[in-house]
Amino acid sequence: MNKTITLTDIDPIEIWGVNNRLFDQFAGYFPHIKATARGNEIILVGPDDQIALFEEKLSRMIKKKMTKMNLNSYDVESLFEGEARSPEVGRVEMAPDTDYIIVYGSDGKCVKARTPNQKRLVKEYYDNDLIFALGPAGTGKTYTAIALAVRALKNREVKRLILTRPAVEAGERLGFLPGDLKDKLDPYLQPLYDALLDMIPAKKLQSLMEDGTIQIAPLAYMRGRTLDKAFVILDEAQNTSLSQLKMFLTRMGNDAKFIVTGDATQVDLPRKGDSGLLKGVELVHGIRGISVVNFTKEDIVRHPLVTKIIEAFEGKEAAEKEEEL
Image 1 (tube, rainbow, N blue to C red):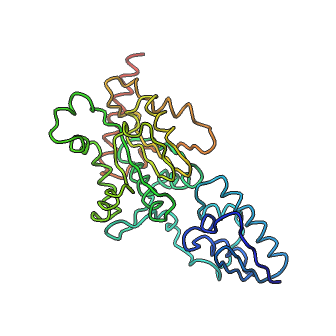
Image 2: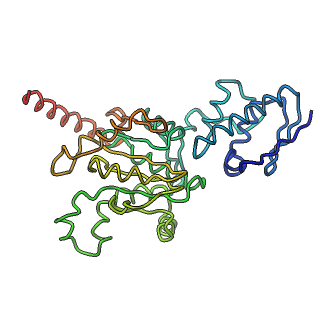
């Protein structure tokens, strides 16, 4: 049987991605069908029952797209729920760890999710539009989030990449720093620049920042904006009040991805109780489309001493709490 399926209500790129990257994977589950994607048409040659099944799975794929900003390989896999994929059709079989390669850095080295919760963050990104990544310093939560953002930008899944963090000392001390406002704020935003430079060559990064494709700004600059088709990361969110966190989260526009990172044990606000991070997480936890990934000491990828330092401080804090009781 020969059949041509014409996609009329949806752009093929919204299903298959740039260069039909998901089509071969999808078609690989149908070894008895010759499937060809040409523009908005899919040409099928094969047994009737297999073509009917292809159409049914395609219909489910389109329905899934209606609930998500972008589809990915995990979405294709979920449609078939463990069904065998033809080794003769589709993309070349990859090494087990390849799934966690996020993006290739400026020096050509791959940036990948290395720890269990870094990998979970990658998986949760595919199924949710808002993710809270919480945990101690050195676990790679911000770095992994930025890598996902850079990949989304390179794959044209979003039009803008916006990185922000609260300038917790944007009052008195900031005023004494030399230079204009940008010079005063850059020290607070430098960790974000550093991560981007690992993944985007310096000249290219400068060009993307000059044309507004990549923006790095303090949290206060988010007020009043609606962020459509953007990948937005709020870093150091433990230094936001509940009202600031609400302001940030309500900036989310259509086709946007938000990741909020923070460490509730490292609040730099004058009164630690003013932090709204955990309060905000508690309020929205359980809402469909929102996920919380809790990083632990086991995810620390910095110097081995970092783990021991964190354990030492946690022990002291626990002892002080016991004394208070």
